[in-house]
Image (cartoon, rainbow, N blue to C red):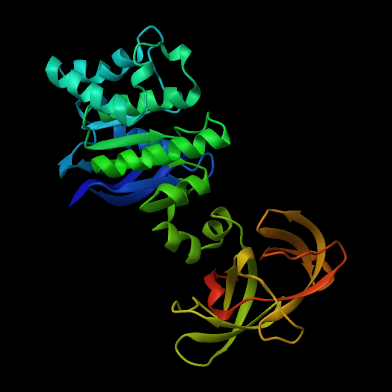
Length: 356
């Protein structure tokens, strides 16, 4: 069952489109992330779902009811803000109960829900403190608890972890996901952090310039990007213009590019003869010269990453054609070294056609 549906949502300001013809649906209990660079329209979409902005065109349905012009306080949604938006003069308990009081929920039920959520988010010993006496991570948990206790149909997250340091962000990220699973909460999460999106989402909506580039599971978005933008924005990718020379059967193609002649195994047919292909840095494998799907790389610089070694280098000795490799295991490489690497045929993906 779809709990949320966006139908051709457009938000324009004169000639500028913050959102343009955006359509997607969300199932009950699903965690969907709106992902994209700054200015791509993800926060605008979130605000329209929450009722803080009204679309120029299109409809928003919540539980099969048109909610496009229903004000925020009358929608079955709750917003978890980037800035937390806690009342500085109210205790943790009073902040959490604020929404329930607005809904006029019975006091005994309020106390029951408060005790339950305080334990779940680990704030029992802080329940009488003011927000200013808490750490950033604790404040974020208060904001999350406040949103959850009202039992909304949809929780909206507006980059809630951007104010936290890296270690704290990872911990709170795990807590949000666990609470979402425990309560089967439908969540719409806005972020520009690819790692967050990949780790937390059931599906990701990748946005660019107000439009949807791709919708899919984290695995689909990462391993089967449908455009150069998605491939380059989600993780690292090496992208090449290539020409499809021939096909051996329905899933194996022979292509030529600046790496040389390559074999590509793909269930997705190329969109033309002159296309873009991509592969991930971690797909590279050291090999002997002359191995199929191999080429020479002249090392420019390296970065030790523990179990992996990031290598930045040139294709052959062409200093205008730089690529990135991520070699696993205890390997070493130094500036000026020439190494041979291969890319497995199944690791190469077809992207869009090269414009004439």
